[in-house]
Image (tube, rainbow, N blue to C red; front, top):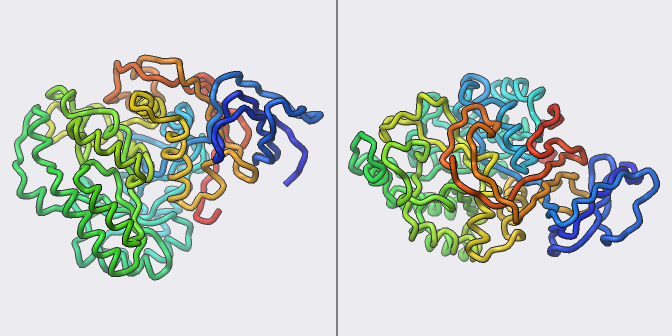
Length: 446
């Protein structure tokens, strides 16, 4: 790497691992070379970008995104998803293995998806593999091919090409993955609790909420912990919704179980009480729960039981969001809005932007082993978001960059405006205007 500084980014508020301070950040060859005093002399030949009092953050890392490309590109594609991410301050995402055709369950399928993504990525993109009943033999080859770990479902996924694992299949896949040092990430809802819960079609959100009870999450997580403890496995709980599971998870962590947990902006900023009947833009699985449950999730973030916040961006075409909560597609689109949504609620609860950066950049990068991402410090990629934290805006779906402008945040006023986003020292988003794609495809240990 050249030591000739090409760019200096300056702000009175730069969030670094050591805290927030006025600083100048030197960049060469797409890497951060130094974090310097605010008034450091700009090297000859270097360009200065001075952001004044806007906050310079490390680019966000979103490890839970359903891009659906190829095969269901009309739901979401790499071009549109990565544009939305860039507009929202995200510089790295990991794509989930299902909802595309083919799913990422073999090396050939991974290569197909990479070929589609390569020319369309506005930000850096990596891939999770999938663990399904029929592909235990494919797990090690997928890992060697660069996937960051493996996703499985314990209940039906919603698409037939990605079936769930029963408890025996879960143990078999987990043992195989643990054997080569991999990580299993799990949609943890117990199918038996879902089957016995009251099922009622129609527009009433209360009926849908009753059909996805907290016990389904709690039981699945309890079983997952038991398997992980027995096998010494590394497991990650996806999109935690039930706060009742927090004591189980906290106890497992204290016992040394290798478990991490994420939650999502919709669980942390939206509540069941505010969901209108028929408003299936709010439908996701597991569901948005009550305000009291949300308060407990924030406590779990504060005490470290929940490690990170990621989007679970799971879009679909508008026609699949029918007014019937039983039949509508479950998924919430929030790639572009996650940072302001979380900052709005975090600020209200007395949390800092440093907390938000830890939850949405540093911790997801650590989860995925992306050592070059997630912090403003020398040696990391020069990935940044510039945020005006005191400015606000009202969400207009027409201004969103993801393919189908369906969002549960429509009409909400959020604090925190992303002014620009930078990938390896290049401005890729500027007040909502996107540059041509320059993202790279990432592989594990890249």
